[in-house]
Image 1 (cartoon, rainbow, N blue to C red):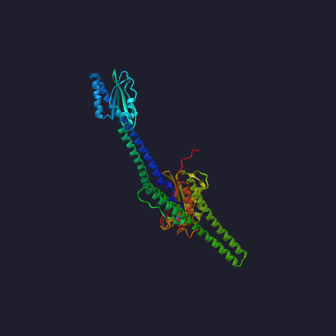
Image 2: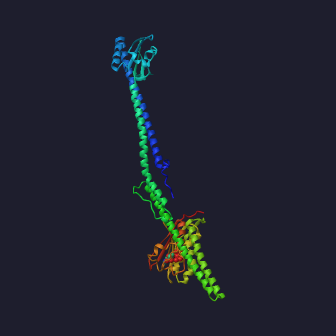
Image 3: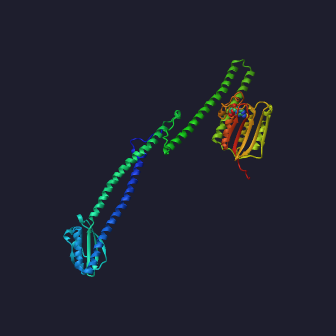
Length: 471
Ligand code: ADP
């Protein structure tokens, strides 16, 4: 029995593990997206602040050169007033680094703007980040030369923007946890739904036993992977059922076939023992027993040969075989038996017809067909064997006149131990055609039959032809 994962061990459920992976990958991707977004936001805000500071400073520089320091300082005061003294500050230094003007720095004590050293006179434009507390926890500052005798330091609190970014980060963090939970939950539900069909399949397969081989897995009709798996299982079960039934039938047949001769031998022995017990009686019993034993041995050996051909357990020596030659030899072998019934045997081929295989096995396969042809042809009938090459195959046709095969017998004649209406009164075991087919299949070929009652019977043994061996 195949056991489904126990309910307690959630981690062992594929659905749970899949949803964990699904959630983790989703969150990783979301984190990556957010990091890119976060970095882009910070950079955009810094650029915006720098552009603002530089714009104001450049305007003051222009005013200084055109209208003098007073106009420039007035413009700075207006800007601070407009933007808010708590949001923007400025300081102007002379060439010796003394502060000559500033906005209200008492509001900027938390960043200690007034005690920060003046920028070195004549330095190029420098941007800095100052840190403080509260509203001024992050301040963007630019130092710029306004003219030969004045240096401006202009600062702007970017804390507001920073707060927005921090809020966004917090919201994204919470959203990500929510997303992870939702992803795991959705993944779990979807996974369970997909797995429920697999579990059903596992249970069905687990419930199939030797007595219950007819059970099949349900197919939903969606034609998805689970349906394909179910179809493969059902196909496999069909084959197993066929094999088990075949084995069962073969066992029944063997038991039946063995029982009759053994019963006969026992009856013979019993009658002999109960009778006059003369030496002639014992000799007759021994002769009958030998005959029955030979028959039994014949059945057992043929069964073993069929099993060997079907399972290819013994490696046959393989070489190039001319089926035209095999057919000619076989016909010659059966001529005496045919003569006894006044049957004519003809063999015909147009040149060598080569196949690759084991010559003894191929001779046996053809001999069974010829044996049947002679056996079932009425006295005075005819048997014709033709060998020809047809589209990559070699075909050996065995035609015999005669009673033909009835429609009821036709589907069964290749089954083991099956004997048709015509066959039952004749000597035989019902294994000849089974062996021939097994040998033909082991060589990559097969046997077909065409016959109707009262008409000729045509058996065709087809084998893959082999190219001429240069050696
Ligand atoms: P057996 O010949 O020992 O009965 P086979 O397996 O060779 O067993 O053949 C199975 C059955 O097929 C035969 O019993 C017979 O009914 C039928 N059969 C086979 N070959 C021929 C044939 N050439 N003509 C008519 N019937 C045949």
